[in-house]
Image 1 (tube, one colour):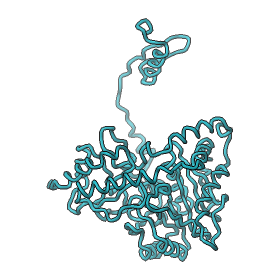
Image 2 (cartoon, helix red, strand yellow; image 1 turned 90 degrees about the vertical axis):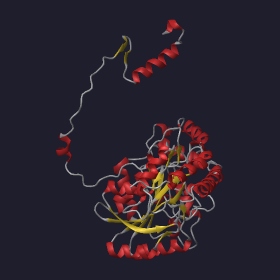
Image 3 (cartoon, helix red, strand yellow; image 1 turned 60 degrees about the vertical axis):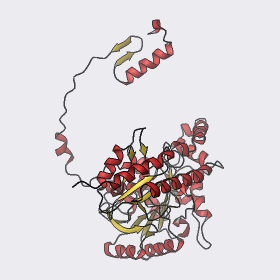
Image 4 (cartoon, helix red, strand yellow; image 1 turned 30 degrees about the horizontal axis):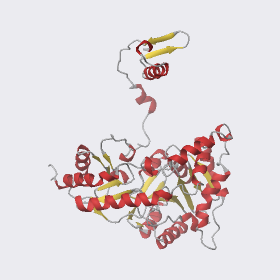
Length: 436
């Protein structure tokens, strides 16, 4: 290639690309050779059926929120904010600084960097009522993202085969974590304001469960934010039954017209296990979360985390700490999310009036839209995709049978300017009669 004017750098890039594709084989000091074409043949993995035996629990398929979509569609299904909403400049600078420190080669403490643990403790401590002992650094364990934290909490506090109460609908990741651990999910009805405390109490009494998983601040998928009175009632039910509240605060950084209210700040009796992730608000490449627990529960959680992952990368912890201690690391989020939410709400109301929003969320990343009872949800999802709009079916967010037809519509993804066109496409699909 060099004799035709290509630079050595260009030639090397081309060879690396061909080697990565398995087309050529480069041998230093010998030369570069075209690999022989290998004839594909079918594989027989039938022997694994007997070796693996029966599956004790079936893990659900990946939800729409985790599936990638082509660049030429309007993506309303994503579970993560668009790249433009993330503090990319701060993250890049933080990685550069971390690379110059001992974090690159040192093994961090099993429970996490002390400075990062202090930061996670300071948030609930700042809003702790008078008379309640605030969360301290010693109560925090650093874990590799909220998904791993849910598995750890469910294993340590519940255990395989035992019941776990959950809101219905609830976060899909919690359903997955429960399936992996093998706990038995028991749904508790929850609406735009949160769960029904009386139904929660009955579920505790009927099942003997010792834990309740919930998202009190901007719940996925409904966006519910518990009012203080509801938080007190739920916490009272949990205490009366000698149980744990696993509080998932993964949407903490996405408040718009309201601020999150960690229930961990209201409890010093060890009933609340608080999980706070940074993966969505800092970067999906920085999978770091903090888990707050007190008493013997913390010891069990730390032991499980140690057995599962040993420790969280010191580089990722250093980067997370660097970013979150910058004065304006999330100042842009509130304004941009509010504008995106309002645009999608207005677009649905104008162009897809058959969708119903029981509440406009005051935080979070998505709308929870109810469809008419007579529609075929699968058809709606498929025909929207054919029209260039990818939506998230609500069935994936129910731990048992769905109570209606819903769509989870994300307003934090790319290209909010396409929201009106997306709503028009959805409106046209909903106006078509279902096929017999």
